[in-house]
Length: 551
Image 1 (cartoon, rainbow, N blue to C red):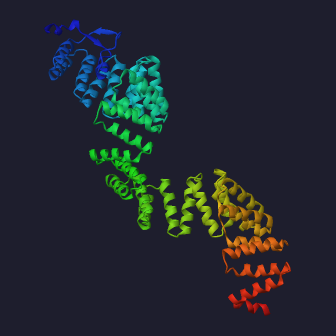
Image 2 (image 1 turned 30 degrees about the vertical axis):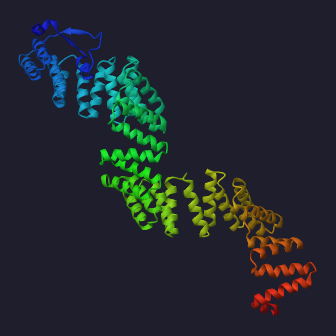
Image 3 (image 1 turned 90 degrees about the vertical axis):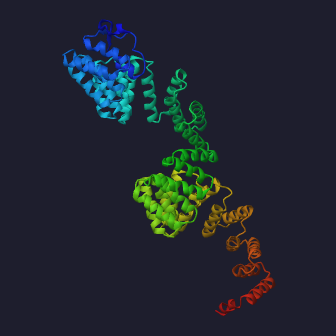
């Protein structure tokens, strides 16, 4: 192989470093020019024999001898890059850029070094220079796209990948980069289409399979995520990405026992991963295994004390276990460490209400609704608190907000009707309660409230209808039977009144008012003897009723 020292036989490939960085051969059809620096041929021969340090010395000697600098600096940069000495490689490429004509190549290679050094703003600048110097250079557009992805400039990154693909539609790196960009924008279906096309040519790519798993998770498609995770696990049995995908797939499919098993494997192999502990907690929590869930959430917080989701979940477990003080302390800690997190504010409000602090709960519900006005359950709880304390206009507003967001919400409609009734707005009350009863025909509460409104309005027919419906539902309230009977009595329907009073007394024999009024109804029917007998029995049971008789 001694003939390889013949410099005339060697050519400089303007894309050589890029091709080697990709681990590929030089692209065909690239313009090649004979090497101008004599030391370069010797250095290449040494490098090919694995004598990298000697090659570097030969290149340094050439530079000292005044040979063409851009070639020699680029060659030094390539060797340093291979040795993963990216700072040294970068310095060489920057010198080549300053010294010679191959600005596009040198700028690209400088960008590759900066990318390895994670200096993304500078890498993007270098790739942009390369694009500017040679707009048709596909790898420079792809490199610029990668740098912009890392800078969080996803839309600009996609534009760069599109430029690369316009030049070379089958460029795998640009296609993969475009898929990643779409993925980051949560356009999971489009990203997955690209991953699947690339997998046809490279079915054993761990990166592609891993991203396909993540896209499946993003789509909340548990079966799809499992399919790709199993392929990845078959390819690499110890793949953590595959195991994470299987765990996520099981959580999506609500197969919590399986999810817990995979999550347990994840924390066993890496106990320092807080997300794995958290997911283990979720899997146990959803199975009702509260002690195990609490332990897992606690481990997540040991690894990452500021893990807001884990802190909130731990507080919820304490709340569900009835440890209201422990839950309160946990929520307060979370509120301090993550003030913008909305979920614990809801849980904290419910807990505050559970602890009997209605004013504090009301303030928290209002605070939550200022941030998230569409939280219908917060409007409902706020309305209940306002209704309880007699703040009727506010209660009406809250329940109206509920039904504006969910028109057939029976409980909200029922409470809205009650609030209107308490304000004396009977027509609005009846309208809301009728909607509640229609939306939930088996609800006794709405019909009972309708009956109460009918009684208040003196509408004996509506009251009777409501009572009949309640009886069909199994509600045998003596008060309702009495009130309907009273309405019938006042309307002159004596037979119906007697039946109603008797029905009330059958349920509650000691119902004095029903007994007395039954006597009056019987008297009005001309059954005076029966009426007197009934009053006499009532007085024997309740002697104190005799005093008002003499007035």
